[in-house]
Length: 487
Image (cartoon, rainbow, N blue to C red):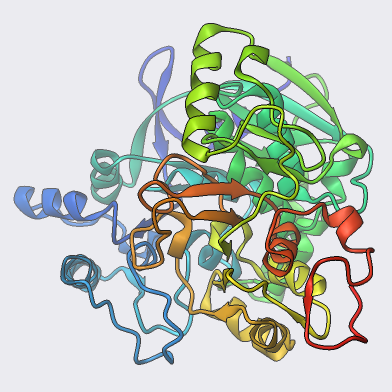
């Protein structure tokens, strides 16, 4: 019997088999942020234990940092508790000799954006971080997953982790995404189809023609959000698209070293033809429409031209109760159209959709003369300093600013409201983030997940729109400052 790619990755990093279900897993790269690491560092200090391999750690201040458009070098965390948290994080990184992208580092950004663009992520690696969206790195053919604080301490001290091996699921995506549909819509449809628990306990391997047509950044979006279906990992075998990205982001590999590595990756990082999976699923990408969440879980999502389901439509009493609670919280009615729902805020950013391709997609919607709808506050938060600089060089920032979007500094920002980018109670937000939980973006906030293009269109229209029709509707109901402007 052949091996899945996931099994090959686990086997390659197994230091010892502990029992039938657990192995001691070697960690190639460990990433940290200021929010989930303090207790781990405290544990090391209390025990008098050093960091075993500082060079295999990387740290970023990203969760609590404000994204005010202050120049690099003048950014400051003004909330005392958050400032103390970041300062403590900096001290620990300096103490143990760990690379840190600090508050005023020009390359600072969201950990899952910074790591790939600085060349730290490569096929075949095991990458761990105290953040659930570490599944992002599966886009490179790496094994990435989130860990807890006690596990962070163990990794710092030993560069290993006691790991329970997952079941395997293969998801084959064929067909072609239609105009208006994106990787974000694809993964939202998947989560809605299989539920927020549909991949629980599984390591998901993606394959198929449609998957292979996606860019690396789109693949990162898919792997990033697969955790919202409960997956313990999400993996895509590397191919020529992967290698092209890596050549552009080589890290410390010179050209010769990169080509040698690519030869090795081609020879080893794939699922065997006779590999057997615990579960198999197929998706036709040509059926994917622009998706929008209507509730308080990423699986409570529908095509933008569909109507909100009634709780009674759900299969069991638990799901029915969750749907009823979600509708009450979100302030929408069963049977209503999600399209045309008015919004108060727009947030474009996060580790899911804060990369340069996401900003290009959003800017492409904002034609010359368009303006953010009156009464809507719209924010663009690049995923990193490098993304911000690239967007400014390409003129994207100018497009956003002229249209009335706020052009911010990098950070997690409104994704999880741990800084001052917070929705007020009752505000409704079109968001490119990964979660729409109750209170995720602020107490009593209401979040609708969607793609960057859909969010940008909502900012102009002042409501949720179908990008497929709105984008070709002349002046439709978008806001303009010139009669000659066209969508």
